[in-house]
Image 1 (cartoon, rainbow, N blue to C red):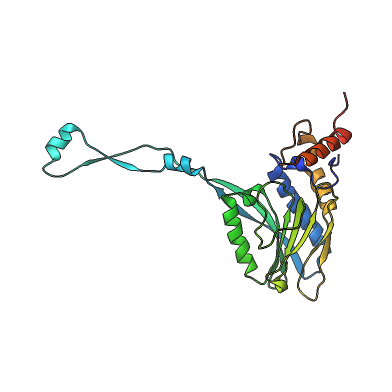
Image 2: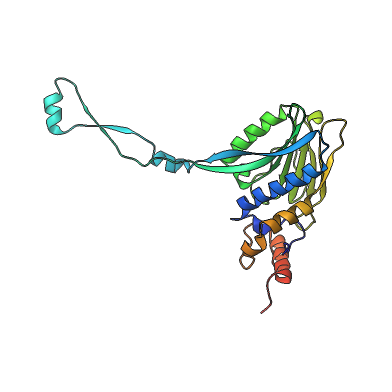
Amino acid sequence: MASPFPGMDPYLEGPEWPDFHSTFIHCWREAIADGLPDDYVARIDERVYLIEPDPEVRKLIKPDIAIARTERDAETRSSAGVATLEPVTLPLEIVDGVTEVYIEILKKPDLSLVAVLELLSPANKNDPGRTEYLSKRNAILRQNVHLIELDLLLGGRRVPSPRSLPSGDCYYLIARAEQRFDCQVYHWKLSDTLPHLPVPLRPPHADVMVDLAKVFATAYERGRFARSLRYDRPCPAPLSEEQRAWAEQTVVKTVRTPE
């Protein structure tokens, strides 16, 4: 069963997102690889974001030691100035790791890096993962490498820009290596069909055009999200009142059976 929405499905912006992210990346890589010249390869790599607890929680469980002394100890050891050290037992802080995959396009024969393609997630659109992501992003922008960022999420902070992004719900940003420090921004509404969009290579090769609507449909089907998404509940995405009314109407027409 296909998604009831013409483009991005806002119901994916919830617990199903990590699974969708991984599935979409693999389908996106396949679509790109099908259009690449023979001397290019598209590979999937991964990174781990360490998501720490709230600072107030960290403060409560910060490791420490204590100097403990009984009254008798104080009397018998005062002349020597010796104190008895005793440990304080505290729980260990285990920092959760969020693993995300992304696409790299490499050029033969030396497999030099040509482009990095990201599907943005809550982990890199919100703190604390956002800071780590922006650091890695800046490192890429300082290289002779294309950076492509696809943002299908309504929630979280958009990528930083000295000028406001054009009005839209979804964005596709291309920072071409030969056009530093400008960025091409494609934008569309949640109700729009996902477009065909370019993936840049190195001259003299032309951009590879990818049908994002087809990529999304393949990922949605392979992940069997029609079975797992709860269309009978409120949409988890931060929709406006107008968007929420539209999403509700779309779901009622295509998914829910009238009573």
